[in-house]
Length: 267
Image (cartoon, rainbow, N blue to C red):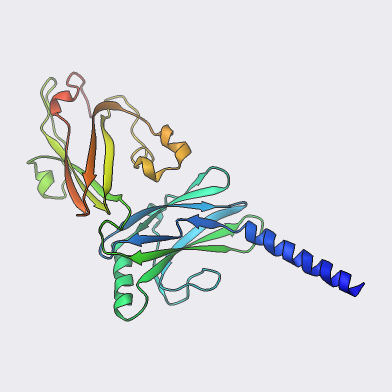
């Protein structure tokens, strides 16, 4: 009788353990290559969020058994302005991990002191029903800044060719008379990794609803079910260009003659 009770108890404990393990939050990918010098942006997907919501995110040099950061090894915290976590699908969460250059520099300095050349991005998830917090870690491996790093745009700057804006940080509003052709412009793009960049040149006409923050994101940074919800504007031209692992490219704009010239107001 005791053997039966003990067996039943062990079976119950095992079932509870398996059930708890099955509902653990997981992430894909579990490890990524990042730039040693400069920022890096990586698309992450967390699976299995039942009643959890994302809390803070940290970068650290070492983690505990439960994947939380070891005190004293924290390199930085994800800024609120860079928190682009979005619910996706059934109990999933998409997260755009943007590693600041300062965090990569601290990880590099830590590696120079003889520590591991990898560090961790740790997301904490809080239960809305009083359950224990869960920590999920992504391994970040320092890999220079070349082809082994995922392709991601870190900054895009539109500028008129030959204007003061192209040589300084001053934003320029170009005044063009109705019917007159606007000057040539270009996009100064900073990026990680290497790959093919495909996109559309669009113009926001007077009276159009202004683009939201989500409209300005690249399509690949959004969950699949939200990519078709981005607002489209008047198409001017499209582009398809291979980006080598150099970190910067000047993308020429479309032919100014293709822009609408008969509307007045801010474009």
